[in-house]
Image 1 (cartoon, rainbow, N blue to C red):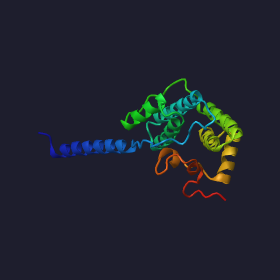
Image 2 (tube, rainbow, N blue to C red; image 1 turned 90 degrees about the horizontal axis):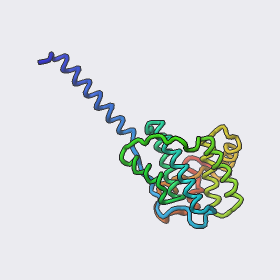
Image 3 (cartoon, rainbow, N blue to C red; image 1 turned 45 degrees about the vertical axis):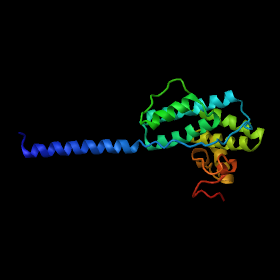
Image 4 (tube, helix red, strand yellow; image 1 turned 120 degrees about the horizontal axis):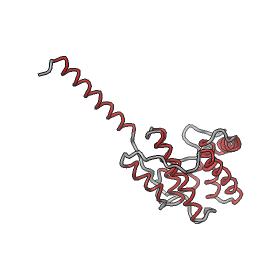
Length: 203
């Protein structure tokens, strides 16, 4: 029989371990996006193959961010936006669907080598945003705004992307990601994505 003081220490250690496990579980809370009918239609100025390629790149970036950050709250929030966008572009994209499933099961994915580095992906997104703006149209303009904002976030050293992102934020407000991640009511209204976020009122 162990002394009482040792029993107390063992109980405290077990309690601390349980609390630590609970905290870890609480930190990994994945809220899968609900994209509804989708924001982008055949009117978007991208072929299906290109849409799937961008979906792959966005999902791969999200996967690596979650893997490297050990599923931190920030990385999961970022992944939720990127998985939603990937599925908005290509609803059956394999990488996005698999990542969504893994995270829903509390499984931290392994980093995937060979995907674009953040600065390279950021540059590709920004360059594509410029082309989308030239193409015009509601959906192209919306995706151009999204790509511009993402490009600045992924690589703050890209001054052109950061400047363009800040100018569009001043002119139109931040992209309303809720319209991409939380479909409700009349799903996929393009104008909803152009509304400022709460607390971000453009001058």
